Picture 1: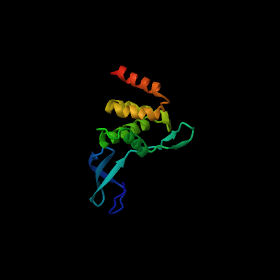
Picture 2: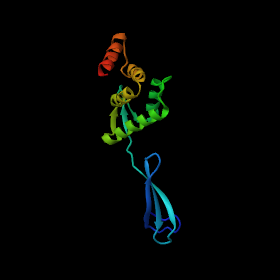
Picture 3: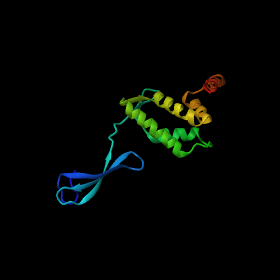
Picture 4: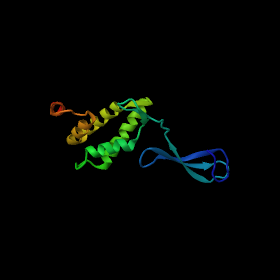
Length: 151
C-alpha cells in the first residue's frame, strides 16, 4: 500500500477490524519509511449479477427494486425497514455466493417469499399474489392452504 504522505510502497498493518456494517475491513497502517499512520478500507469485490426476466430480457440486479417490492408487500404492516433491508442484503449475498452471473427473476422471487414467510405471513401472501400472478380465487386459496399446512 502506497503511503499517502511520502509515497513509499511498503507499510505494515497496525490494527484491523470490521466496519460497523460488516461490509468492509478497516486497517490502520504505518509507513515503513516515514512512520506516519493512515487508514485504509478493504472491500470485497462483487461481480455484477444479471437478472433474466420472465420475458427473456436481461438487466442488472438492482437491490433497490428488490427492497421496493418488499416494501409494497409490507405496506401498513409491522415489518421494519431494517428487517427488509437485512433481507435484501441476505438475498444479495446468497446470489453473490452462488457464483452464477445470470439469475432468473423466479429464483429471486422464491428467495424473497422464503424470507417473508418467516417475517410476516400477510406480506408473504401479498408478495406471492403479485409474484405468482394469481388468476382467480382458487389459486389464491391453494397458496393459503399450503401456508396453513406448513404451520
